[in-house]
Amino acid sequence: MHQLSVWQTTLALSMALATRTAADICSKLKADGITVEEPLTLDYNLDVWRYWSAACGDLRPLCITAPSSALEMSQIMKELHHFETLFAVKSGGHMPNSGFASIQDGLLISTKNLDQVFFNSDDQTAIIGPGLSWGDAHQGLHGTGRTLVGGRMAGVGIGGFMLGGGMSFLSSQYGWAANNVINFEVVLGNGTVVNANKKVNTDLFDSLKGGGNNFGIVTAYTLQTHPQDHKVWGGNYIFASDRGPQILEALRDFVEYYPDDKAAIIMTAERTALLDTWIMFLFYDDHKPPQGVFDNFTAIGPLDLTKTWNSYYDLLKHNDFFILPGKRYVIATETMPLPNKTVGAEVMQTYHDYWHNVSKTVLGVPGVIGTLAFQPMPKAITSKAKARDGDLIDFPIDQDYIVLELDFSYELSKSDNKIDAAIKSPFKGFNNITSDYIDNGMLPNAYRPLFMNDANYAQDYWGRLRTTEQARQTRRRYDPEGFFQKRTSGGWRLE
Image 1 (cartoon, rainbow, N blue to C red):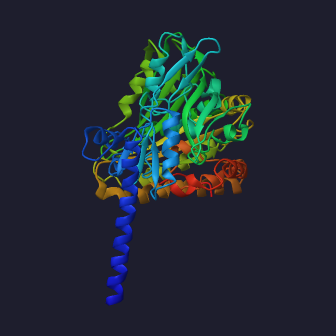
Image 2: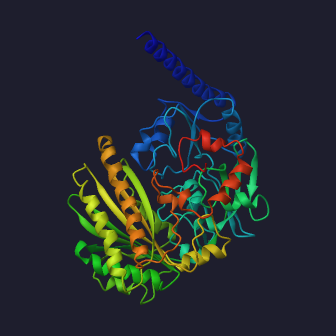
């Protein structure tokens, strides 16, 4: 009993010391003149509220620091070496995995004051800060007749989106969002500020395109812009649940015979306790799609909610309707090689039915919405990505894919464990289904990387990449102490 009391006392003292030490960095940064927000202040509460998943907002950092330049970010990195505390970096707060862009009892670094948009008319590039949303970035280019390869909703943040690759409505024309980076301004773990591009620090430049938070903190992205001084078309088709087989057939054909690089879609199956339906997101990079582009879908007889929009920004802003503030989210992904037309119906239906059965088990959870999104990754995208110097994800250019994204949104923290178990079931099940179909020849035995932006915290991102050793070498060169591996509170760590 006496030994237990000594142990408990020692543990309590250690925890108290760690908390004081962590809290001290807040005071030090404030003394350095860097913006620091403390608990109970309005700015602090607004920042922890501004997450897509309310579960991330449940985590309470000791303080929030918001640097306004690369030099201030450098100072924060240098100071962190003198304190024993974990940290996390938040851009738009889109990632729902708790601890990745949120933190309990540590330092949260918000990029919200890194909100610059500088357009260079000479080379048609734009320097964009990671603290912006894609809607903000597009507004910053208003009047230039140019656009950016970015998020498919205006409310998506820039920072994490870019480092995960970034899928866009414009990807079939210009590749991943990350393929359109000309330069990264990066603060390394030791506080050094460097640029990474095709001329200097080229290995870092390559590894940041899909490498997440393993190498440094990006404080500015120089992006190639693209012409878009015209109206665009898009919106939604809504289908009844019993049209599933026809929808999946049309989707499979769309991916293989990709009819037009200006076209993009996401097909989602949606389930609640009272609703079972399909919602399709459509985009065409002109005022109206030519006949034949979406005919396989219109032939199924959807409720048509598409229109011509005055600008690309207006369409992205419309899609924000599907962001549900205050909900809790979990997410996962899987990559499926496209099945051929002969076996396509069976294979596609198997994935859908598996998800449908799993979602049925949580329909009693208050406020639950289950979504399975089929996101085309055809050769039209992968070839453009490769032509723009490639990326760490390294999809081959001779294989069509569908990237599956699964999520559950729901209301209450008491449902966390049940929903966490439910989201893990389909991503494990999908992997098994894919492996079985590959073994019996119904799917090609293709490389299947995971899409970081949609991945669950428990998925093995690095284990699925064929470029992992390349990334490890980059990490050893730019972060030899493993600062980001040891001190960040979350992420897919590159051990």
